[in-house]
Image 1 (cartoon, rainbow, N blue to C red):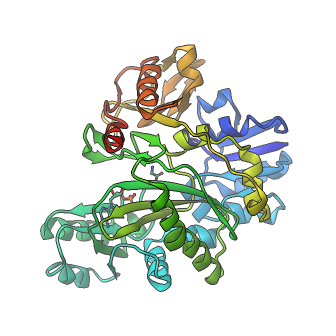
Image 2: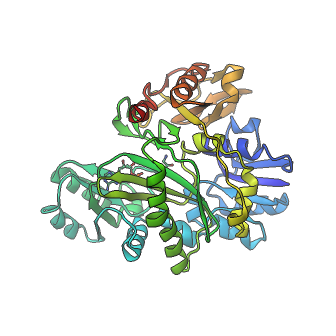
Image 3: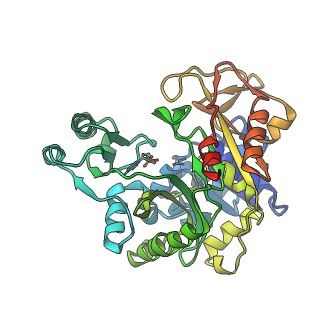
Length: 421
Ligand code: AMP
Ligand code: GLY
């Protein structure tokens, strides 16, 4: 079988390494892939949002199955375009990917179908938003409606900060069209949990839960990033809470999307907050999380391609999705300066044992060498019988990955360890 994976980050590297365990697969192509993925797949260099070029490549190369991993091509209709040429895909069509593509859509969906989430108001008129903020409870949360590279959420501690965020988005255009409509919502508190779930539009099979570490600095300080490390499972997410989420959030979401004529097939990511009033949805993503995938898929014992095809074929109910009863930790190495400005082009070296455990997010090949080409550069994952040992081993292996200016958080998993005590 010939596969095509759209995307080129650490998540896609983890997906490709997991898919490769299936002996039926003869070739995997990546659009665009990256310098590290090149060890495991044929990198085409075609950008993930170049839908026409991706489709032309897939047709020319007789691709049997495609996996569309990032949000932008999903929202742009990459799955629809490949399906039109008869190529089956893992991932939602554009009309379902809107669950991530528009916060207004997802908030209204939750309100209409009674799915627990933060109270909110939607504004397309800036003055109305500013007036509302004069009396809104503080802290408050301002969100750009559309995709904003994970940066479209501002937690405002004061009214002035909230107003500045609204002006920046609606007048300053810092997120372009994505910010011309904003959602202002209630500030929630509680531990956060990421739950990725396979769904064929009929049943939903959650994967092992995980915890992201979004801030750049130790002890959750500094700017938000794409994610500096992950652990799985998330100790706050007990069996009892999982059961509640299935009843109040997961199944109602699948049913709501069907009722709207927007059947969702693929990986639905539930960003949850376990508030004193029960679990609530912070956000939906229409795809695997990054770097959640780097701890979740290494724990998957079932064959990934089989499960993905079951989502596409509508046979997920009959397909086993089994996870190892173990713990995983992923430690990200980033370029010094990330998430703001940083230099690129430094050589990346890895010991053989580190290389086996490492997914490359931002790496390119230059003069035959692997060099840094992004903010987040690598993610190194270890699996162990206990969370404590998974963390120790992930740090030990990550010591074997080297490049100039490498930065990592030193406390990935520590909050989770405390929760276990
Ligand atoms: P997002 O970019 O949607 O993942 O949001 C980034 C982060 O903002 C989340 O991981 C939460 O920590 C935080 N956040 C988003 N919405 C809320 C909310 N209503 N209350 C508190 N924190 C929030
Ligand atoms: N790690 C968060 C995300 O993938 O959106």
